[in-house]
Amino acid sequence: MYLKMIDENDTDKVWAYLTSIPEDENGFINNCTGMPREGFEEYIAKMIAFREGKGLPEGYVPETFYILWDDEGTPVGQFRLRHWLCESLRTGAGHIGYSIRDGYRGRGYGTEGLRLLLKEAENLIPEPEAYLRVNKSNPASLKVMLHNGARIAGEDEEHYLTRIPLRTGDRETLFSSDRIDYVRLTPELTDDYMTMVNDAETSMGIRNAAVTTTRNEEMLWVAGQRAKTDTLFSMLEKGTGRFIGNIELFDKEEKHATLGICLTPEMQNRHFGTESIQAILDYGFRRFGYDEILLDVFSTNQRALHCYDKIGFVKTGETPMTAPDGSPMTEIHMAFRRKA
Picture (cartoon, rainbow, N blue to C red):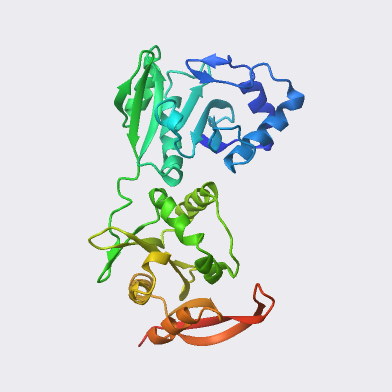
């Protein structure tokens, strides 16, 4: 079985499934009951837009809608993952809602579907625990949650409120330098990432444009990066745990990779850039055996150019560009070659 985000390619099967479910089944509200086939594409488009944070009703947070499929290509469950908690979700329905198709219950689909969804949640939601709610009249669903590591954190007259831990290893130090611990990119630092990338000067240094990123856009970026790379690291100051910035190796080939680095404004001009670049060079050469590490930097970023020159990067070329104000500039290409 597998979990897949809802999309227009599965319209017929998903429509037949979702429109057959009662409007309220064990507390899971289904908006598709009795919906005609003609309007279902619009519904799917709306669900896809909700993931991007577009067209949300007032008071709603972005969410991703998944369908659980069995090995024969039959939709057997629906799962919703809300990207973060507002106050009503924190004390109510939480991050996750799900329902298993009648006829497929009691066969392990709920337990496995929730396990798969929690993997998605680990990459996306910023809270350290997934919040769920279950009707007291639905012991089977409570058992599904408990099988996935839930604890009962509270209750009201009709519901149990459960919590499932996420990402217990995200703050584990992967390697260190004198003042910095390097950890995995984590959704728990989303607000720190936003402070960094939405700083105008920082944005100009990495994008050559002052671009504002929304919280949901940043969270989706984090989820995508966590899913595809293990050489993008967040840097934390030793002792305080304060966020310093991100550093990564990307475009990895057999003999070389490209370096990217971004420091949050508060931690600039404290030599963290020099220290972290020297650490990532050592990491790349030791772990992957690269012959050289490459980077690109805008000619307008004189502070970064001075840092790279000091470390020992050499210029290998440049590409003409235009600055946002219309003046000429270049993107400078540099390399640091491993010493024999």
